[in-house]
Length: 272
Image (tube, rainbow, N blue to C red):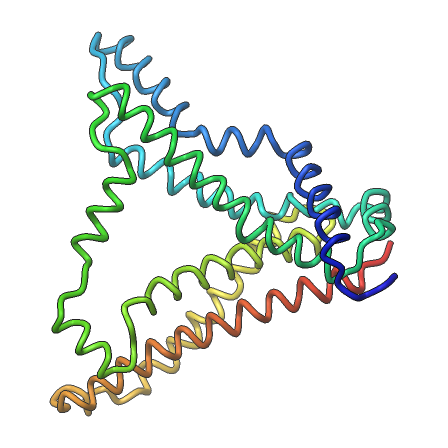
């Protein structure tokens, strides 16, 4: 198979790929995207049934459901391309006339951009529409995010301090996005590596890594002498914080790239 990248061929394959995803997973995607609507209907129904009052769910309840469903979406990443471990469907996928690079790019676009953005648009859009039609619900989640971001706006002194520490306000947003990519790629990789119990093995790996890291921390942290920083000058503290934040970003970026490489290696060597 030709390993070169053809935009025309990629466009044809990407259209096929996203159509296949919709055909196989549309019910689950719709259910997750409209989770806010389901919450609203259930909340109003039980309110009328037990309290004889009509009132929509509060902002906190909607945020809680949104967070839970967002976590479920991460776990569900194991299903979108999990068919690659199946002998019949996986073999058919290998024989599709598109290069591995085109399949890989399509997989990343769908996993990291199309699916998360569609979930956000549908979830926040339906929440906004409910709030527009029913004033008992209160403010939409988007306004809550907007207010939160407004309250988190950095003043001039903060920005000056960040520049001195070689860290921009956009650093935190970039770190959040890269962390999200790492989560999605991890569950995607588990989905195309394990034949059965994909979510179980993914959670087991997370639990195992958490246990190892916690054990290492128990030995490392007590051995660190942080007393030197108790009365440190401002420049020393800036250097410490800058080093911690940059290390976090570098580690997360390397992890994301490593997971992406793992996905590439898996689809390049998959056999049945």
